[in-house]
Length: 135
Image (cartoon, rainbow, N blue to C red; front, top):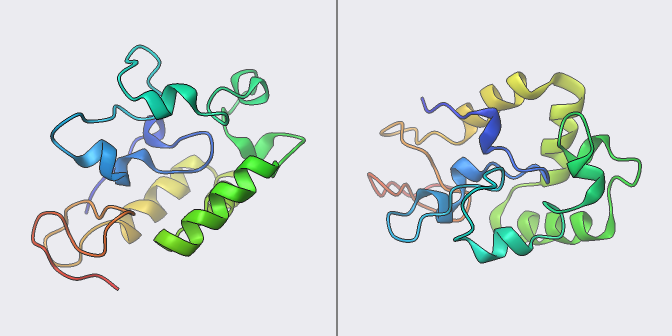
């Protein structure tokens, strides 16, 4: 089973470790919590990542913000629920209620390929390593 680190969980609740941009070989995105690498332009421009509430919070997650869920996060969550079968609002709720360590274990269970144990990208319907079709 795969392991994820706290640093791979974006402020919005996305597990960057399951993002196709993070997993690809060419032009690999270093993840949303990496501030020294400015190669991923979308990450640098991200309204959520650069939100002053997030930058000044203890946890660094949207779930603790008094404006949670903001309009931008609701829109992003809707897109990911529709296209990729994952909810950032649910992820943030798990983090808030059960803690980051529990969420990381949960993600490891649901984002590991049942056939080969590799990371399953949230953006694909098949394992990137063994090509097994996923529901």
